[in-house]
Image (tube, rainbow, N blue to C red):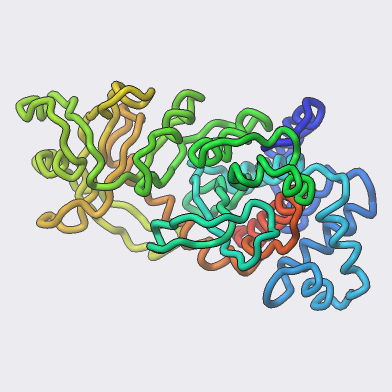
Length: 391
């Protein structure tokens, strides 16, 4: 899916290193400097500044027309459209600069991999399809995107995006041509698309590997965890309570090797529970307390994740009920309390997205172009970051 050349990759790596080495003193000004230094032409820098300002200040939908009108420069509509859809600038280099800026401004503790359905009415926007969305409990029409979010207790920011392209789009030459889909884009599974969202910054920009927090409750496919683990990225994934596992913990050796649900295994491990105090990142600063237990398990079957010893983590809000959350991880040597606190960073991303995501237009691209979608998402991510900078 990526169109980055070797020369562009080298430039992006240099941008990450330079941005990470310089801690910003004045948030939004320093962010603009980091972002637009990758644009060599003055007219591109001017259009980039204007587009970013439109995302931050225009009310309502962040279409090019609405932003130009709200900024009081309606004559710039065509120029802004060209800047996003047809200009020559490299969105990957700008994303690398954004990642480097966030590294310096609020060093992330983890990367949150998050899906983002974008509902659409028409059939011409790149990647649109129909699929069943488990969280909504219904079939929807639109795009499926994945974001990689750098997150700490103090801030979250999306630094990379992937747009899932269904096979019907990639095997239709007319659609590919109209949407300007690069020849490098090949058919891949939804799980591979999700994993690449996190792998790209590490492999192509030289970003530092960090633990990945993912939500795998809606799948029985371990492809995301397999790919990230194979690349050396630790994974802490939320899973469904009815996921089938086998016990590999000496503390529970008497329970046998039969497959059990994750909830059933954790029910048998209640004696191992401990109280863990945690703070809600970006929320109520008063301390919270949960019960948590971790049990060594294996995934039955034959994929790379299967056969390895993993750690099953359960959290209880009430000691008399079933676990409120169930996670699995290859961080088998990390303490239970530290793992539980790490999971809470997903709350920071969810809260920040609810407050800011739609305000800066993360779902508002209205063009047909594949590259245009990526450019819009890059600048929308920059606007998101600017609006979430610590004061």
